[in-house]
Image (cartoon, rainbow, N blue to C red):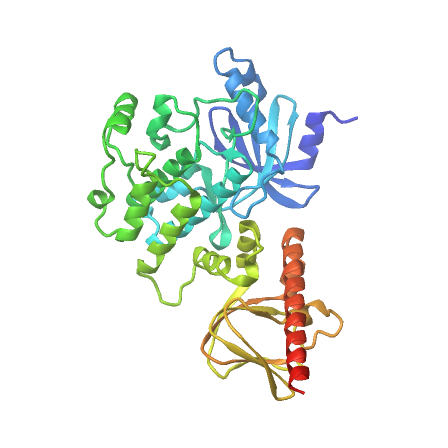
Length: 431
């Protein structure tokens, strides 16, 4: 019978080392069982025997193993499984090929403003989700945010996470000094505002290539955090748009009464900043699309995770007034949601309805997999912004998203039946 370590080596083909730290190493590997590339984080179990740091290292490793499979969010690196093999503890994780955000803190590799906003917006949403699961990250920094293809942004390394509802003894003296909030050094218990502070510092570094204090030692840095104000963004870089500058300054403010108290408030200010950033007029970013969907009636019952997944599988289009979108009797399996503008619905040349922002159409053809024929014609009445979701993409989406759409379709049909009944009663009343 194969030993645990031999089984591990038979299953995973180690391809190259991705990184190495104080407690272990990370490798790119190929999982021969699931037939996919993965990142494997190996922790040296012998470190747990160290009399000084062993308990702390063990708690951090247990934190990550406890979260294996628990956090399911488009902006959090997924941990597929955890275990031990020989002298190593291991985590098998989603692999992202773009490295970390740390590469974009160098002056010659800074990201454009719009990309910084998009990245920070996604990190905020990931941490908001984690907080609603009862977690604080406590070590947010560019090295713990991964990048992938197609603009993917994912928060990694929850080894220092604080479980807000846990009765188990937890590690408190964790984090990375430049990203720790002032209250940490006053022994204040961890709160959501500690993570918000860290994201603010990370945004500052991504915008300027520098940290917000100029201390030359750990002691001086702690003193400055407690007693002095950060160097204003405009002194580091004078072209940062005012709305973005405001959001970053407030996020990392040393006074928690001034600092954001919620991720939503931070995100709302980032959304305000985005329109003021110079960029091609046709450019659209996931954070803008998320905001649009969140404010449409059709998506009112969707959680943030489902909305982000919808953003990922949707296509956004502009339509001119008078342009036909779908034609009665034509084949098609896509469904549509109106983001802005109006459309008219006709059947056999007779107008049945007029639709506006938040209205959905095309769901009948999506649900009728055998026939897939349009039951009516939909034409743009004004210039429109239209969200199209291909039926096949939705069928391949997560079970949670499919269930959410099914409930939305059910509510839509019930409302249409009520409207039909009202019209019938009105006609009968006229007779």
